[in-house]
Length: 237
Length: 218
Image (cartoon, rainbow over all chains, first blue to last red):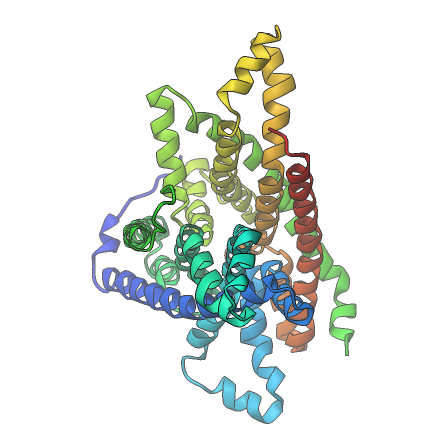
């Protein structure tokens, strides 16, 4: 054992306590904003992957497979360092001079990445709906588009609420990777406290407590949503 | 156009080897500890069940990157000297991934019905034989797709050891990129390497999933 003087005061002594809270606020922002992108694109690509029309199916499959099989850190660095270069030299300098660029890159990258995971759950939701239902809906005279919009998508979405709860929790955890491009979220702040005070152990422990409370809050919230949108007659999972 | 990659290829691939090595340790240790965690989660002894459950539920709420930092800070205090980032990263991966593997094992163990155990006993098999010839093979077959998927996630996660300065592939790519400024090619190359391995892995997982669905084992 190395002699180590614990100083839990770094968790509430100013400015460090405030830093952690500012970090938490940024974590919440990143998670929620990215979730909007993840949910809309995830439902879109998950649906595309499930349809019979081959060109659309390929688009959905390619998107999901690429974004799921590359580590998020690599995706984040690609968008942050290589992303602006994709627009050509003149635009590149303009983009790089945007203030708070890293924040928005983190939101978009996290959203695009999580969309692939949401898409997989949506696809699984579609797959779990029996063929009989498709036939029954079409026999009522609905067009395939009406069938998806009015029956299949609402049904599948309710089925995938439990796995999406897990995904919503994961998005806050994954937002910690944004620290690597300098977004001052919770994990970044705990590391910054270490740089200033050399009490990284206490700071990271405090950050863990913050994530724990955040996680439990999200679970409570999603429990409520799950109960609210449960399909009557289905066994509660 | 690809000179930046070709000239630094040995350097980058040595970094990739570090990812693979880290994944080997993480998977070996994570599966072993995970199996124990899975057993603890179905244990009927409260002094086993409760601590293991707290451990699992706690770590599953914490980002891996923070766990990596925490062990990076705590290990020198426990051991009494500064450690190689690889050792510290390996320990954090084992402790972290074991909670995920543990839940897969728990689900696998719980998927075996009591009737099946009763049927095995009624044919005259003893406890050890029932476990070895009936329970473990069936549970393993059911768990295999999830285990492969989680192994792929673990392999992707090894890139996060970047944050404590481990010389893995992403760290080395940022170093090369800072000299060569060929971000598009370099990061696409890293992405491609990870993609190939993870995509093949996910196909294998899908294959076993389909196989067990067609076989309709119990």
